[in-house]
Image 1 (cartoon, rainbow, N blue to C red):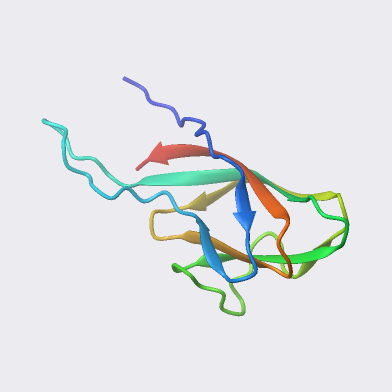
Image 2: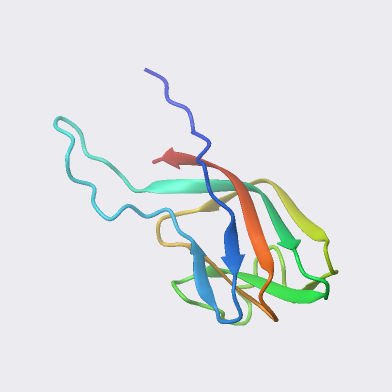
Length: 124
């Protein structure tokens, strides 16, 4: 039987002023099924929108890497991007894989930015 990736319902995520984990698809447990072994899922990120809901510009950086990471050279999609007051910025991709070991982390210069993510989830 053929399988297909599914579109998950990822709620809006607030980006704070300290680097924090924003998105990771790892399952805590792979036990349960009888007759086959589960594998960790992966995300195929297609679109990220950052919304500034304040009256002032806010600078945002996103990172792809280890949990809680913000190492130079791991910036992803937005690197010190200034989002104008009450505006949005978008990142589009034909598909960027995020495996269970990959974390999307981020930081903003002030509170007031929310992130919306469109992706597909699949299993290897």
